[in-house]
Length: 287
Image 1 (cartoon, helix red, strand yellow):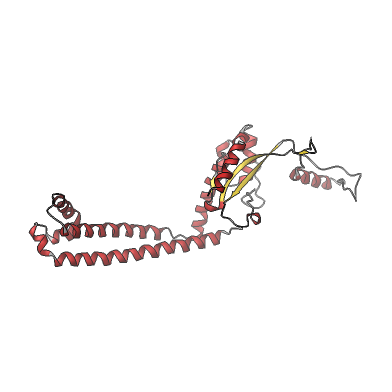
Image 2 (cartoon, rainbow, N blue to C red; image 1 turned 30 degrees about the vertical axis):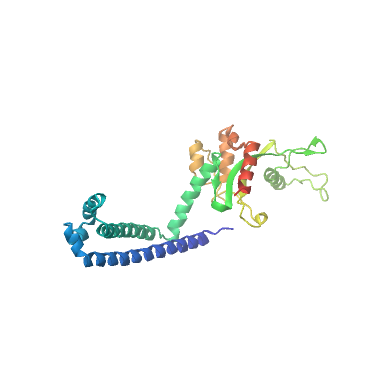
């Protein structure tokens, strides 16, 4: 199970590695710039021959570079042009890496802020999946909703639909509250039968296609959230689909059920052609 604090720790560690790498590059560019600057000073005479002021080069390097480039294109300069180009490039790369260094440092955030950003990101991912799209978690694979037949054949005949355990358990609990005895094969063979069967031939599953490089895939399972908070069950009807997509009161599983209640043909977003499923399997094999 992924813990957000572990994700945050990995995020900060990865960010710090990038910051250290960029800082190393900055120091290298400073050293390179100093070396090129000394080479230019030591070859002052060559610059004076072509009327290029070293002071102008150091104060306005891009202006000097434009003049040097024009002379170099005419075949008048060789080593002087190389020095100027190298110096200007060192300034350019140093500036870019400084900006990157500042941006990476600004990306370091408290855990509470990271948690909020993770929540916003998860909300957008959920929207994409609920609309019938796919979301790829890098090498971990893809997650999407898939329509799957509930009925199956046994010895040439269609077997009845499976039990809806969620509805059945609620019905059983209600019987017990009313003082009635639910059916039990051993203890209450004359009790009230409480199994409720699904009334649809299709179920809708949150499907995880594990990445090809994941070892022991049988030990992992994707479990979609029902509610964002324990016991937080919304009773007020939703006004429209956008409200369902954007709410944080219920989890992605219940959002799917609400969308299917609101729009009677929403399930068509999850109907995957068999050829498409086979194609995705082949793509993973060819990785």
